[in-house]
Amino acid sequence: MAWITKNSGTMQIDRRDEPYLTDEIKQKLEDEVVPRYDTRMAVTMPALHLVQDTHGWLPQQAIEEIAEFLGLTASQVLDTATFYEEYWLKPHGKYVIWVCQSLSCELLGQQGLTQQIGEHLGIGPGETTEDGKFTLMSVECLGSCGTAPCALVNHKLHENITADNFQKVLDALE
Image (cartoon, rainbow, N blue to C red; front, side, top):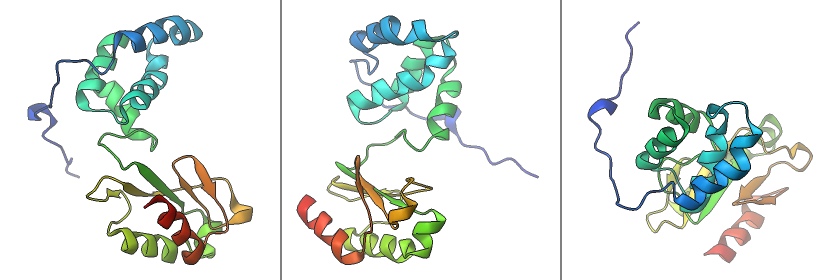
């Protein structure tokens, strides 16, 4: 079996003078987060969350800054950031639409709904509209099986959705 590799060793990283891991974030981590954990490695997820909440996503420079702050390698931090769906390694839309694809939602029309939303926005799952307004994502489960199909728009849950009633949600956002 051959390994598929990426050319990350020669990857060009866009850098800015101002750090993503600001002094304020570092201080918050040191004061409020680090004391709660046995190792600095355990602070990886809270650090990723704080930087992403501040900047909206996690540029490679931010990954490197977090790694240096925690005494880890950038690859260790990147492994964590790429394992979980909640971290963004590229900018996303102002509105992120997470369509649940659990068995309940699938049985009640999730595939057609995702397709209709994508056609309306002109994007597929994992893509962002050219104007940067919407990102469409599929998620394994939103924990609302009794009201399937469901979707999140940013942090607001929409239940028992149909193409018609979800179109009203999109219209209100546009």
